[in-house]
Image 1 (cartoon, rainbow, N blue to C red):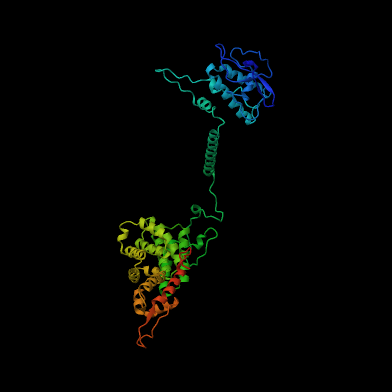
Image 2: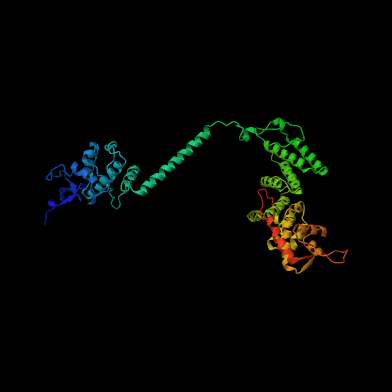
Amino acid sequence: MKSVSELSIHDRNGGSADLEWRNSRASQAPLYSAVKLSKISKKKAVTNGVLPLAKASSLAKMVGGTRPTGSVVEEADWPPSLRRYVERSYAACTDKQRFSLEKQLNQIISSIRANKKLQSHDWDARPLPKACNPVVRPAKGVAHVKRTSVSANFDASLNDFGSEERKEQRLQRFRKEAEEAKQTAYANTLATMAPVPHTGDVLNWDADTIVGTCSKLEKSYLRLTSAPDPAAVRPLPILRQTLDLLKRRWVENSDYTYICDQLKSMRQDLTVQRITNGFTVEVYEQHARIALETSDLGEYNQCQTQLKQLYALGLPGHTMEFLAYRILYFLYTRNKSDINMALAAMASTDKQDPVVQHALGVRHALATGNYFRYFQLYATAPNMGGYLMDNFVDRERCTALQKMCRAYRPRLSLEFIAQSLAFDTTEECTKFLADLNIPVLGGGQVDGEQLTVDMKAALPCAVAAMQKYEKVDIKGQIY
C-alpha cells in the first residue's frame, strides 16, 4: 500500500501534482485540505503556526477537500498585500477555526477576483475574516459584552457573501436607497422652486383667480384658451341679475339653444372666480331642470355631477329632489353598480322623503317586472321626474308589450292596451304600435267593431323593437 506522501492527483492540465497531507500535532493546527507544492520543496515545514504563501495561495484551488469551479488564481497573480492578508489571517486564527478560515478566505478571494478587483483592493485595510475573531460566549453570571454593529454585521455577511439570496437583498436595498434619494431630491426641488407663471396650457388657479368687472347681463359662452380677462367676466351681483333675466326669457320664449348658451357662460364666470355658494347651486339646479324639460340628458348629467359635489360641501339646495333624479337617471342608463352605490350612501331619513320614495318605487317596479305599477308611478311622477322618465318609457312599453303578447291570446282590445301602457288616448297608442309595425285590426265605431291587436303576430315585432334600446352613449343617451 502506498504511503500518503506517494499519493498524487491529476491537475487541470492532465498532469499530476504531488500532495502533502499534514497531520494534526500538538504544536501546529490541523489543515484539513490538500495543498499544492509546485514551487517549494515538499520538505519545507510550517513554523510558528503560520502557513507559507505557497500553501496559502492554494486556497483558491481547493478548500475542504473539494475543488472550486471556474478559473484558479495563481500565486504569481497575487499582490503582496493579499499575501500579507492571508498570513495575518492564519496567524490570528485558532486551531479549531482553521477549516472555517479556509472557506472564508476562499469566498472572499473568489468574490473579489470575480469583480476584477484583486489588484486594486485594499487588503491591508480589510478586516480579518470572522474565523480569526471567534465570539467568546460569557459564562453564566457574566454580563454579555455586545460587539459593535458594524463589525458584527460585516462578519455575519461573509459566510454567504456571494449567495443569490444576499445578492437579491443587496439589489433591493440599492433600489430602495435610490428611490428614497429620488423622492428627497424631488421634495427639495419643490421647496426651492419659485411659483411657475401661467404658461397658457394649464391655469394656476391661485394666481389666476380674478374678480370680474363686466356689467353686461348677456354674454355668449366661449371656451377659454388663455387666462380669463376680468373685463370679460361678470361679478356676482351681475350674475344674479342675469339669472333672473334668463328665467323670464325661458317662460316667454323657451329658446333652449339661447338659454343653454347663457347658462353655460354663467357657470364659466362662476368657475373662474371660484364662487362656490348657494347661488352657484341655484344656477346648476336651474340649468339641470331646463335640460330635463328639453331632454338634453348630456347637459343634465354635467349639472348633476357638479351638484353632487356642491351638496357634499354642505351648501343649501334641493338635495332630495336631485337625489330622486339621480336614481331615475341610473335606471334610464341601466347602471346597476351606480344604483347600488347610491342606495348604500343614502341615509334612513333620505328614504323617507316622498320624492325619493317615488324614485325607489320605480326602481322596485322595474326590478320585479311589475309594469302595471311602473306606469302608475309614471303618471304620478313629482317635480321634473316625468320628463326624465319620458326618456325610457317607450323602452318599458316594449318590454311590457312582450309580456302582454305572451299572456293574452288571440286578440286584445286597443283601449285596454292604451290604458295599461299609460297612453292618454288610443290615437297615441295606435301611432306607437304602427312604429313597431304592429297592425290594428277592426273598423272602429263606424263599422261597429272594436279595435283589436293580434297578440301572436305582434310578439316578434315587440321583440325586434328592443334592439334599438341596447346601447347607451357616454352622455347617457340611447342610440
